[in-house]
Amino acid sequence: MIEENAKKILEEIPAQNPYSEKITLVAAVKMQTPEAINRAICGGITDIGDNHVQEFRDKYALIEGNPKRHFIGRLQTNKIKYLLGKTDLYHSVDRYGLAEELSKKSAAAGITSNILIQINAGDEPTKGGFTFAEAQAAYEKIRALPALKVEGLMAMLPDTDDMKTLERLARRMREIYDTFKRGDENIKYLSMGMSGDWKLCVEAGSNMIRLGTAIFGARNYDK
Ligand SMILES: *Cc1c(COP(=O)(O)O)cnc(C)c1O
Image (cartoon, rainbow, N blue to C red; front, side, top):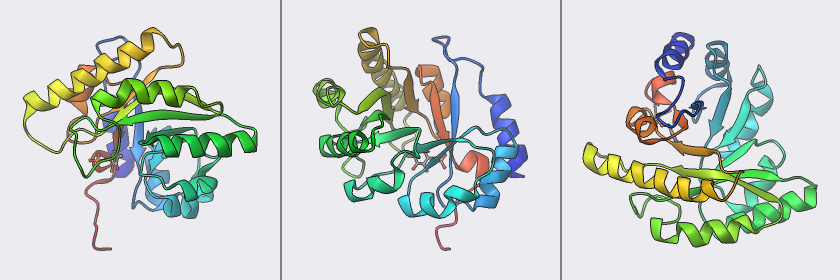
C-alpha cells in the first residue's frame, strides 16, 4: 500500500512547477516505522524528513537505500549534536539562536550545514519562524554566519480551507523567495506544501513538498 501510494504521488506531482523548476518530494516520516519508510523508498522516495530527534536517532541506521535526510521539525539547540553531519538539509531554522548554534557546531566539526529559513506565513502563535516583516533581516543575519549555507525558505501554511488566504500566503512566500534568489545563487528551495495543500503550493511556486499522510495514511497519535 505505502509503496503504491508513493508511486502514485510521484506520478501525480508535475515534472515542474510554473517556474520550470523540478519539484522534490520529501516524505514526512514522523511516527512511521523503519519498515514503512523502507516501503516508501522502494516506491521511489528519495528524500525523507524527520520531526523528532529521538525518532531520527532510533531509525537512522535502519533506513535502506541511502535517501537524502531532511530535518523538518522544531529543533532544540541542545539536540543539534545528534543531527550534525547526518542531515542534508535543515528546513526549520526558525530563530537566530538556533542558526548561530548550528553554525558554531558545524564549524567545530569542520562542515557546512545546509539550511532553510522557516517563515511563519500565517503569523500563527503555535508555529515557529520569522514573520514576513522579519524575513529580510533574518536572512541577512543568518546568511552571514560562517558554517551555514542558506538554500531557501520553508513554510507551513495555516490549516484552513480558505483557499484565497492560502494562495495569497503561498504567493507572498514565492515573492520573498524570488527576492532572495535574485541576489544569491545558493537559494534554490522553497519548501512549502503538505498533503492537504501541496497542489496549491506548487501552483504558487513551491519546488519542495513534504508529504506524510498522502504516502503513509493518517497518523495514529494514540499509539
Ligand atoms: C507532518 C509534517 C508534514 C506532513 O504533513 P501531512 O499533512 O501528513 O502531509 C510536513 N511538514 C512538516 C513540518 C510536518 O511536521
